[in-house]
Image 1 (cartoon, helix red, strand yellow):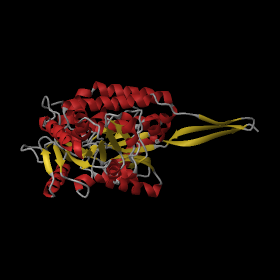
Image 2: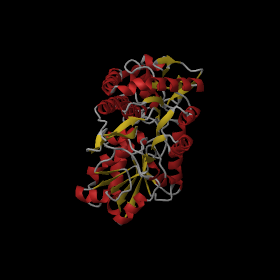
Image 3: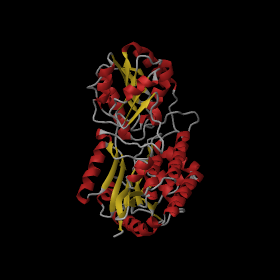
Image 4: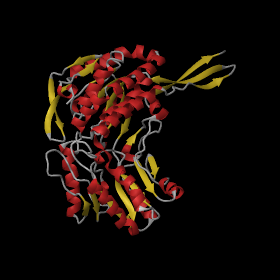
Length: 473
């Protein structure tokens, strides 16, 4: 195993490696055992990171060309360390090594894309009275908090636009997956000026300290709805800006002209990629009654032949669920559905081995009013729900507090697009799900979040508008 995994990781504060006054254990979900320890940031150390971010701000915001060059250097440095970062990510997150390497590459792609974004200057007035120009100014110190499902990719989503806009960042990964992000902090300390990026690790207390810290002007958070509400409440007294990317209960609607053999692969991986641990993944599938049997059979066959195991093993397609609480939640939701009369066409149970492994599960005989339909399961289990009337299926798909993504599957893309336009969600896909790009805005409606990430719209979230007016009188 790479030395970066077995070595004691350090935080990066003010460009320097820093250990904590204490540590906490990091569990390998493929074994269920602690395999490393991460530094537990103290409040004084967090204050130091915030001071370093403030001290670096004026110089960093002054040179846009230097920021672009630094982001490109950061992307290159991450790619140069891709093998080590992927090994750490697999050890702590559980995903297959190939998927971990892809995540590192995607993070670098997001950083590279951000380096090329424009900070527009818009002329509002230019006449004999005066000249007015609209410009984008950095906000200051950004507190960035990332989740355990895609810790490196989502760090890239936040760091790229925040840094290009001229902000400095203090980044905190989930305590379930701190190691790869800590390693990234050490790598980027070699290409970013001291204080521009600090990476700290710790538990819930650290997150609360960050979101209420007086130095922070903006919070960028990805995680659960409950924690997102707490972030918003913490930001309110100081009127901090925030972007919240929260949960989803995405519906996929299969139309009556769809070919089950054609759509099953996209439906399956739209639900089970990253072992179902993705906010914008398919969480429920609505299928016409006449196609239900064929679609369920096709999905169940794929589920049974999908190889589940430790991410370090060759050929593994799905790893373990990342942590014990989430494993318990998925197991509980599936057991509850089965107790209510649902049938597992595939899976429906944990695997008999060490670690947090759960068989890919396709459920039938389940409907609204069951928690696994009404709530976000965030794991390798998906219910398939029959419908008779398309309007009713759309209404049921929209009858949720979430609104992140959705999809419609059909042999007629135009017909599917018309149905997709009726979905109440931030991204509506046709014959696809989870095609995310750095140039596409990503955000949700309802309880799925506030604000957007990615593209020029995500960049603007890290800026304040300023009108610069010069009188000619």
